[in-house]
Image (cartoon, rainbow, N blue to C red; front, side):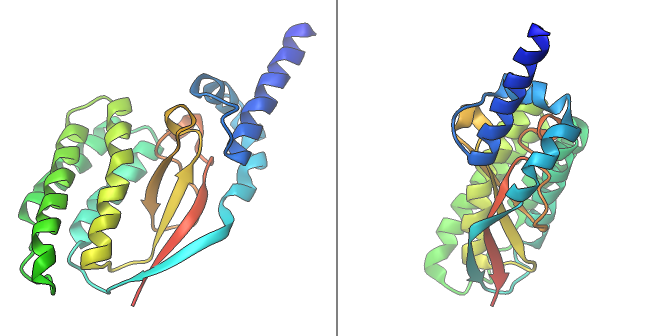
Length: 205
């Protein structure tokens, strides 16, 4: 009975931390919680859409289409703990970042900035292509900022959602981009698949 009570308390603390975005849980507790995913996922459904979702608009463009495809393939692979598929998508991301066309950028002053972003994206792709899944997730978490910076300059051919998990990286939090408002967490995968919230919607002008 005592073990049962202690287990229940640990489960409650972890779920509460994820729902509130506070620092009351850690990754080891998260793993325990997701052993009983059917219990915790019900408590996290209300996190899928935040009450204060922001919205921004970017140019309608297919300049970054291939890179977004690669990025989303990595996201989908990590969400189901598929290291091999993430590695293949990472290699493709590195290739596409190397060959991306920057000649049609309307503002010449932004060409150099885009080239620098692409260099960083390529580096992340290379790391993802040759790393274990935890290291893949570290580089994927950093990719969100670079892809957002790129999309703000060159535009997007699809609606995107910025999603955020407060418990990633010892409660420092981590973000990713998705084409759906439904949460499929790539930073924790099967350990915590529905923990997160939509923070921003990126639409096209």
